[in-house]
Length: 257
Image 1 (tube, rainbow, N blue to C red):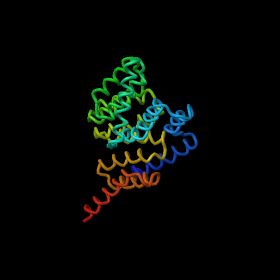
Image 2: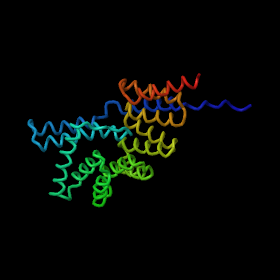
Image 3: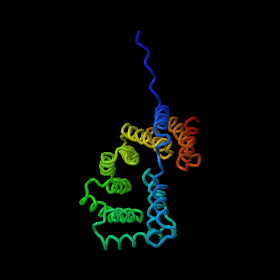
């Protein structure tokens, strides 16, 4: 008689256990990076100059849309937002003209080109930075974003592998690797990278949603529904998880008919 074999854990169950363990490890230690950077700006002076306003705009754009872009979503700019992006572009073009060796300014300039859809200009700025410093995390990361948008998934994966090599404790690189792997239909690798991201950033609804997408693309709709529901426990208004849940519940109704 064969010994009893332990039933394999479902993806949803595995993810839940990883999240619980990660939350216990990270509880009380995480800091909100966007809040810290905003506080740095606010503490510097009580009144904003034009330069400070644009710097704050940069921070706001990076964290309010960067997170979305980073996790595979897209933001459509309205006219007022695009006006601010254009102002930021002009500002950093002038800064780079005055001081071409300032790599941080070139990163922001490249990212602003990316926001406007000027991918070739963005790539040129990021590659220039890497020619000066081949360990510059932000250059690899933003290059990866451009390549993802252009559906150059192997190139994107190469960039995000570098980000993880440079900063293994930064969850964003792991998330991006997971997204790139998913687009390449390398689902086991995608799940592994995304689970690693949850260990570094527990209770992040975006990351959980990305794991759900992997399950959905594999046709594992039951697990995907559970995972989307899990994401909504952390953010009940998370639109992408709500949409995914509605989409799959409708599909299940059709399958069951």
